[in-house]
Length: 470
Image (cartoon, rainbow, N blue to C red):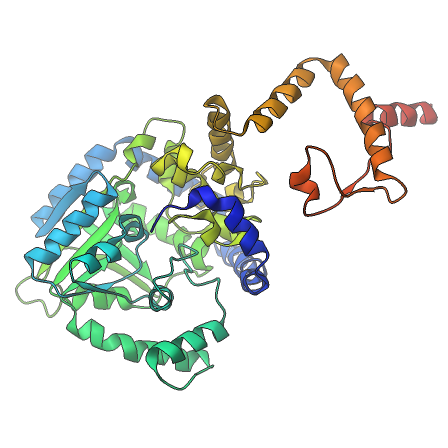
């Protein structure tokens, strides 16, 4: 997926003007948020979150040890474990595997790391057909390889009518409007690919060190077809996804589906440990795990290490008021929402995502729902501070902050300035007591009116009230 994070403001404006998108995104606030709140009542969320946070921290504090343990155990069970420093390296490794096994067709289960790798593009250039088999990802692929707008619900920005039109156009069949009929049509289209693919590519929600296993969590069952049917299975995932034990995985599975899709448990949890052995009835002949750095080690030991706890549930974006209005495509890279606003500048460089740390109200909703307790709003504020320190923000903004800092450090000057400002703003508001245009405040008044103040500061109003009571 190409990086377009620098166009956030322009893209966000386009999305806000898209009435159909606005209607589609309402599903987040009206359904997903309420459903998650309900399903969390089944467990002690705070205690479970603390337990998972501690387990994820334990893995990250000794990441090299647990990765070595995973590699040793997976290798002992016949898996080839490969490491990639960059996402380009990871894509090359997968391409080499495909070339080695004379692969002509790849079937894929949803993987955000493969989006980082731009894997479909790489395979296509070498003449290998790559077919997305998650329903949402499949819809996007046949729609001119449109990127996902959500890490769990990649096609949430579209409605049923749009998909019905797309299916009729692509499948050359009568237009269907009932969801069961449409999903059956998709299954019938994908089934021949499952039967004829040479290689399956999946992500891995977690890798388990003590058993050398990978865990894949889905609702559609296509990951089973991608890992059992082809003769080669390749799992690509970030190095931070390692968990020391199966007990850690059990804790994670109590929170991941509840946070992601508001389910007590997803339909399918696959724990894959090595390729097919003698006497096994199914499974791949060859299994590979590609562990991707892609900027992750750069976070270790720094201000943003807590971001490595992320289990990619999408809860932060579901509850974010900004994401709920602009959707995922506005963010311009693989990871949208609050988590993407931290990950994108952390992985790609802060200078390539200047607007993303600003794309948040810092309301803290993301903090309160994160299943591993990542203080996302604090991390976003740290990114803003770094932008200012490196003079990456516009000069007008930096000058404005400098002026504000001066007044904040000089109370007498602050009091005089605010006394003059509120009186001036009252006059600008006029009889309507509303300001339609504000010098140096166009970012607010270009899209809404600002209520005019009453002409006295808070201190003056407070002093008058106390005097009246006295």
